[in-house]
Image 1 (tube, rainbow over the protein chains, first blue to last red):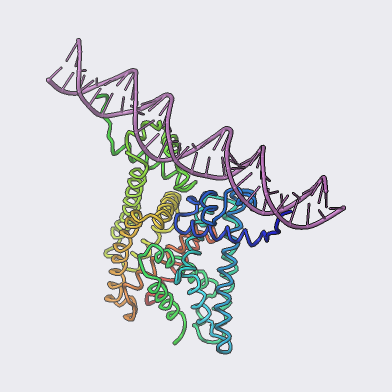
Image 2: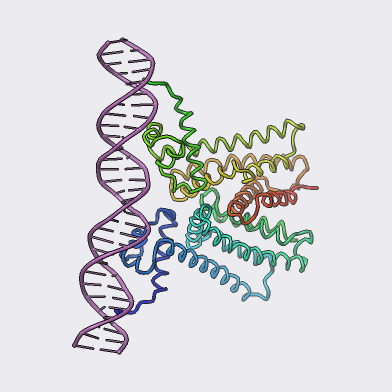
Length: 202
Length: 202
DNA sequence: CGTTTTACAAGTCGGTCGTATTGCCATACC
DNA sequence: GGTATGGCAATACGACCGACTTGTAAAACG
């Protein structure tokens, strides 16, 4: 055998090349040849690491959602490191911030996510993947709202599950507007704050 | 010349065939041949009515947004016909309902809209089109909120412009979730009601 | 040291895409 | 009634696409 190569590492490299293309030209506009060129490798080499286009797509999706999750997790860890037990409101704000296209990295990630979202709309198998992530996030948000109510930081008339869905939908919608440049990412964040301010007692 | 044909009528017919494909397979999956087949005509005939694919796409987009607008307008007219001067809250609720995928027609329209939205993300010219619609809707929503504040039906601390953006973003986000079948359209409508209930005084 | 296995390159294949070309038929007009 | 013209069909073209096959070099292993 020739030099031993870390397969996973190479696959990640290729996935990142795919993101760069998908975020600028869309997922449909990312051919195997384009991705290979973007990654600086040959088509043959790319095919050596993925059995087909579908496998590459799925791998890249799982990898990017893992990264996005980690990014938010880091954000939360940094938060709970500073003071003891951050308030639910702060946690929710920070999560929402992590879901908005506030920097180039998350912007790229969101564009890629939308490309997959579109495919999920007409692809049964992809839809399953896309549906999996949301309940987990919703449960986490709901927990935060529950905690807030328990602490008396939010009104008791507040339904944690419903508010979780509302906040997620709101963030998603603001993300769309921001990506379309109808509003700026900063305005989007301001609107999230506005929404949260209404939910939590002063 | 042979039999005279209503060009606009034919173009609309073709546009509707395009929607049916775009709503099930996405815009990228709609080739001229597919659209022609769906419309029950030959590729040559389709080409006779559109100078190229781009022109067909733009026409279909303008046509569908016109229809969606008319649908909501009808809804509002039916509303103001029943009683005198419907409350802003009712108007906003009805608009939001018109923007959600509550029936098959609006569902198809939204899927097509998303297909265009995606293209707009990476296509400068399409983005202009997409950006145009929102300010008008936002201004209308803001007017409703202003009216509500003036009538004393909503708290005076409410910023009409911000609330308009929030409601639009929320509706968009809920639409995405509903199309992905993470929530049902009825749940989406319920969440809009929940949001509106918080904004308006009881 | 020879064999096997891995990493990669290059080319080919059938298919589909948007577009352009060509031609025929039917009709309206001079 | 010839002819110009609009409606439409058929076909071809060049550029891609994803998948597959083949060839080659190099490193690990017996």
